[in-house]
Image 1: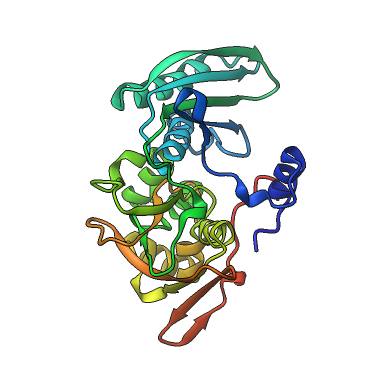
Image 2: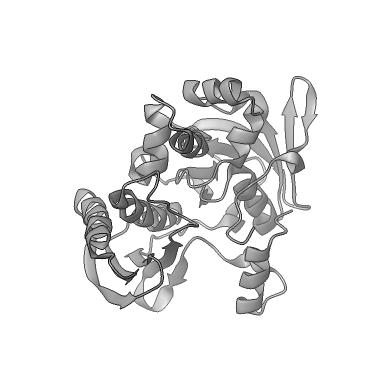
Length: 301
């Protein structure tokens, strides 16, 4: 599970044998804060041939805010950095407009940052939120918990494919990719939630992270995963297995969490069976689905 160069590098940086002890945010106990940081690079995370510059700035903010929310907090302040190539000032202003639009809509205050020259655009943010009474860690899943999904998956990957192909329509998919908003799918209360993570890489990756961090056996009912009509239509139109879209789509920026309570406005998709040996099993009416066949995004290929 989760064998890729990104985790090898994280493991090298942290110097730990088990890279899965990290979470979406660091918990800064001395200052009662949760802190996260993300950066995005032109050509890897955004492409101006298929998306407006404002979207790049918005998505950077969404990625950071989603991490803070997944810890059971709400983002309050942020730092912003940008590297700007030659003749890139106009695009830079539009990127910053996207950053400011997200911050204004969700009342997140800019504290400072840095600008520099670069061969291509690179943008980064560090975001802060108040430490909640009970931070939500990936390692917090408990035997008997229900596994919940906050919204549909697959939309972001569908949106990217349709933007690349120039397909008309598919408004919800394109919006999820271009302007994701993690604030739209938050539970009414974090009470009773034991474990949470945001879907940034894929549903497959995040399930595996929860399983490894909690040393938990997870069972997912394939028929319980919500399927958006645009995801189903994309699967048929492009002849892509539906499971590839549901489990392999990244940058959804919605919550995956476990709870011993009944949670409204979220989709129950499975159970935490035990806290002994990490595993993720997907069951369907046709038997067990092989999750290893699903491809996921990697920053390093």
